[in-house]
Image (cartoon, rainbow, N blue to C red; front, side, top):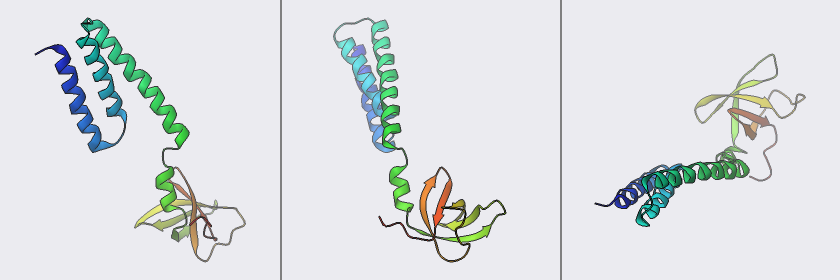
Length: 141
């Protein structure tokens, strides 16, 4: 079996794995394997095949990271949570709170420091693993 067949088979296997994970990184490795397979099909040496594969992976990773950073990695998950009510379990002396949301305890910070400590609270935004809470439900919900 010719070397380009192995490149193409690896590309197909990685493409199948990508469909199961959805990370796009395996997709770009699959593309890199395809580029190397095309180089092999055009009778390029193994060194050139490996270099083209590596360059495709490196450039694809840089492009993907830039794209994800510009798009906002967690915007779709955060938008599901914004506007949802939370239950305050305890307020801390530093003004932060511990809240119950989705059956788990989360750290939370109030939208502003003068906010009352009682009543119903809603998630205004998510900063990492910390919820920003408000008394008013966001209008976009």
